[in-house]
Image 1 (cartoon, rainbow, N blue to C red):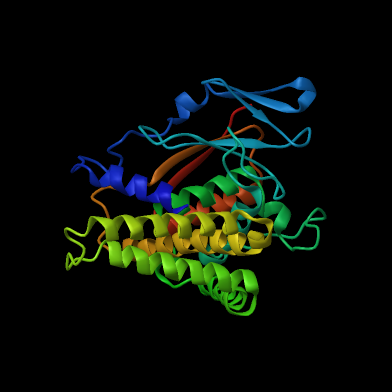
Image 2 (cartoon, rainbow, N blue to C red):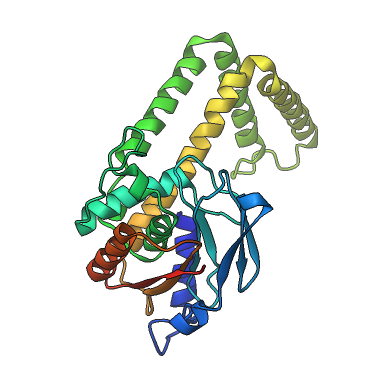
Length: 302
């Protein structure tokens, strides 16, 4: 999420614009009427005529929608539902953005009514509509929410859990102790070879001996880490690296939320929908626009 937002902030900060939509505007109502979603493939595909785009669906009759922000910002597609993962050209994860709709609805004071298709979570059916998911996506990219300036306790808990398990493997298992020992030995050889005090200057034989020993240690370490015995260790270290990137991105997000806003911000968008938007989506859009000072418009492209 953060990478897309950083890129948009970079674009908007790159020049002093003459208007709040320096990089173009979304389709106007008159232009939006030239877009049409038509069914094909027995109802399992929606084809957007306007530019042409095909949206494969997991179930016949699903609603798809497309977010247009104008200018250099790419279009984004979504499909109603909460069980699908993102796939081109549907780049919105149903579960993630349905959850975000619940969060935004709470902020703006919108009640998501219950429905017979909620499957155990009250309001889930209304929250999963494609246009609502795209509104949540737009807000994530262009609006700072209260949570953006706060630490992420769930992320920190997960990092602590993985670190604790890694520590247990390193200190309490044979494979962990051997890997730790080889890494320590390699680090000591690196320190000796690349010592800033230049103690090895002119000592070519000693340097060659240390380099040979370092290669042997590195080979043994790599073979051990690649072995099936170290599979759990590799997995945890990889996961910890990913979590570290997520932590850094969230720290960057907090910094961005606290920084002065860019000289321009995107506040207008058009959402093209393959069916007529329901009253709940219209009411949600109205509350979002009013609360955040946005101008998001829904267009039934049928």
